[in-house]
Amino acid sequence: MSYEPVPPEPAPVYEPAPAAVPANDKPWMAITSLVLGVLNLCLWVLPCCNGIFAIGALVLGFLGLKTSKRGFAIAGLVLGGLTLLISIIWTIVFALNWEQWFSNFQ
Image 1 (cartoon, rainbow, N blue to C red):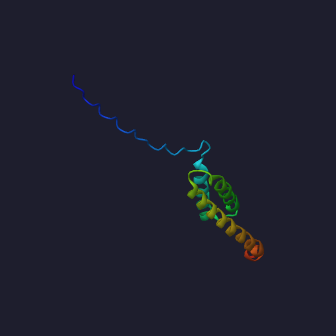
Image 2 (image 1 turned 60 degrees about the vertical axis):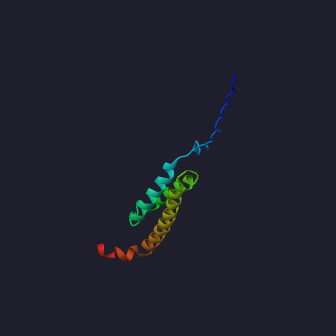
Image 3 (image 1 turned 90 degrees about the vertical axis):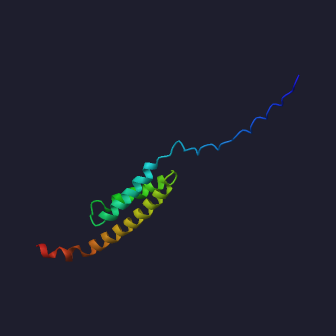
């Protein structure tokens, strides 16, 4: 009777678990924050939308910081803050000079 050795089994290969996406990951908030920031950067001269888009970009940027699109959220926060500051300055300048600018329309 001949004895043939059994080859050893190969060592198990462990694969790292895939990165789990949080259940409440909402990357649309960060992307929308960036879009509103860029849109407000283009439309800051219009008084009807200069503050609304900036506040929307800031709120969605803060909410988007906890998502997987953190960079978009930070960019939206920066653009929203910058355009809100520009809008406040523009409103002050307009309020101080409106009478002088529109005196020719009488």
